[in-house]
Amino acid sequence: MTLRATYRDAGPVTVVDLSGRITLGDGSALLRKTLRELLDQQRTRILLNLADVDYIDSSGIGELVSGFTSVTGRGGEMKLLSLTKKVHDLLQITRLFTVFDVHSDENVAVRSFR
Amino acid sequence: MTPESKHLEVTLETQVDSVNLAEEMCLRVAEAAGFGEDECYRIGMSVREGVINAFHYGNQERPEKKIYLAVDLTDDKMIIHVVDEGKGFSLRDVPDPLAEENLLSTSGRGIFLMRAFMDEFDVVPGRTGGAEIIMSKKLPGPGNASPNGQGSGGGRAAAPQQES
Image (cartoon, rainbow over all chains, first blue to last red; front, side):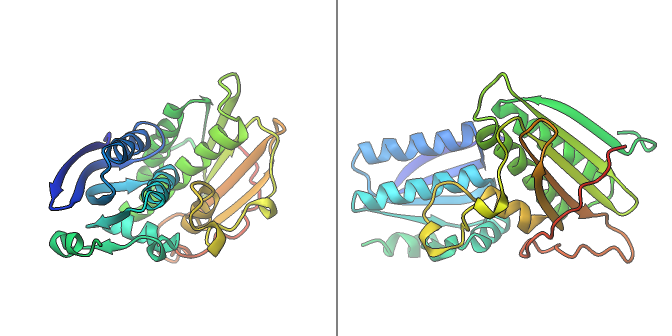
């Protein structure tokens, strides 16, 4: 299943709804393109909704990390919302839970941005 | 793979589609061998990472080079070989992606994931001069509980298997 990405505003935060797989090729490329687009629009408070992402490979993980460093490098914040069990486990074993701010409630997540 | 056949091999092009093809092929073998959903996920992910490694690091994304994938089903395990036509590498030279200084690295987690998700994992010099990744998972069944079923351990070295 290819990745789909749409975004919407939740106050000052841009919520990116992703669905599908973030893997080598089109999935990783679409995530990269979407985040670049947001940064070009000066949107630097980004919440990635991963509720419908059931698969991420090392390329997808790399893209998440790359996006995170790009956003924080611009003085912004990028957080994650609603991880599926597989993605949760993947971030746990790769120790990326210590890097990303992960939320399960969108309202709480939106309020957590500076 | 028929019930009589215990060995399957395919030559893949050095392209992104080969990653998905290899994953799908090995998932079918794993399902037919009786692995459950979680173990199939771990096997599929490991195959993806092995072929990504061959595609990107081994063959340097050069389309004239090939990737060789082989799957063996023995009495007690599923063994996967991924061979590239690169220069080979040593596991000792692979940075630890869990080290604090590497957490924000955008690459270098594939080997770690294969080690975590499979029961046995090793890299040896391949017959084509590149690297050969060998990884295995114990078949499901009574008395055959996978020692690495939770995906949180580290794959032990897999002895290279004689291909039938």
